[in-house]
View 1 (spheres, rainbow, N blue to C red):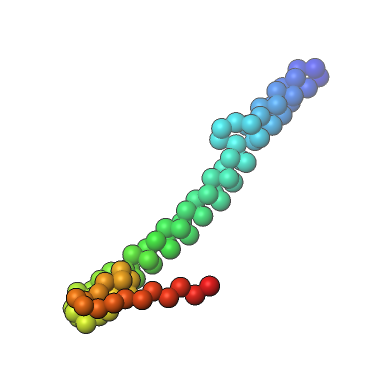
View 2: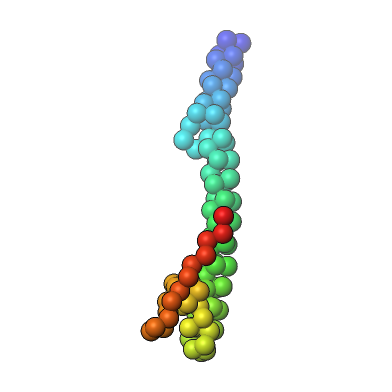
Amino acid sequence: MTSRLAVFSLFFAFFFWSFFFDSHSYIAYKRHERELAQLKRVHEGHKKNIEKNRRRLKELSHNNGDLEKYARERFFMKKRNEKVFIVIEE
């Protein structure tokens, strides 16, 4: 009877240790699973952003009028003898 209790106690202690405190524990597994899901969402966002930028680059490389408009709006470029006023709304 005592040996069964000892074996059961050792099994329970091993299970308890491996479930909560081991580096491959269930808690660590769940934490890594959540982190992986978050990284997948970030990855998808980056993929969408890359695709949007590729489409924009393709549009700008085929149309010089759009390229000039983009440069003026985004980088505040100007022509000679031209003044640019930047209005900041508060």
